[in-house]
Each structure stands twice: as structure tokens, then as C-alpha cells.
Length: 142
Image (cartoon, one colour):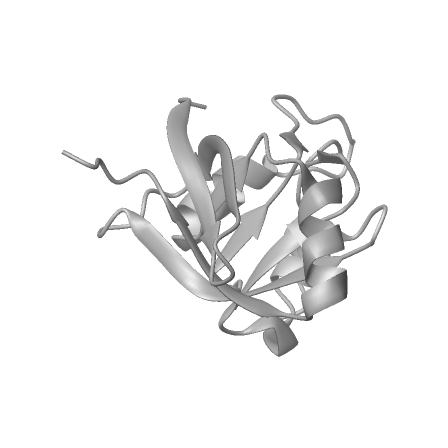
């Protein structure tokens, strides 16, 4: 997993710095409605749930990707979300059922993400304002 500096910017002006995870967007930017999810496990099911189409999902649980992914846990044939936000993406997974890592699923599916984000702070913003438009990416300002 290569580390790429990234930033998340919300429509209210909030800025969160982190690192790019998953696929690299062709434009360098991923945009959508930012929402949060409080699952402790089941991140793969959330990412492949069609009800999250067009949304960027922030996971409140701090460690995502611990047990990898398996095709048996997909809610649909592919992820529908525009992106994922995590506090910490597991660099290794450990589960006898795992076929791959979460990062590998994101790359294969073309889904970008941003890690290293203070998801507690982000969740407070979203809790108070509701779902809010946002964008993240690794694009250069030069």
C-alpha cells in the first residue's frame, strides 16, 4: 500500500488531512455526499450496499480492514459508494475466510479512500449538520 498525501474538504469549509488509500481517481478528486456509519464489523457489506450509491462513507470505528474481504460477504456485485473515509486502514488482514485485503478490493473496484482522518471530529460535524457534500483527493495545488 503506497502512502499518498490527501485532503478531505467539506462544503462547510472543514478540512481534514490524511493519506490516500484504495484506487487513485483519474482526476485526483472524489466527490459525493459525506455520511457516517457506526458498524464495528461489516465494512465490506456497507461498501457494497447499493443504498450508499453516490456517497462517501466515513467509518466511525477506528480500525477498518482487520479481517479482509471475501466475495461471500458482498451485498451486491460491486461497491456503489464514491469513496471511503477511515481513521486507520489495516495494513494486514487476518481471517481464514479472507480472499484479499480491503485496500485491494477498493483498488480492484476503482474506489478511492482517505485514511488517517479524525473520524470522531468528522462525525460530530456530520451529526450536527447532517449529510454534507464533500470531496477528497491527492491532486496537487501546483
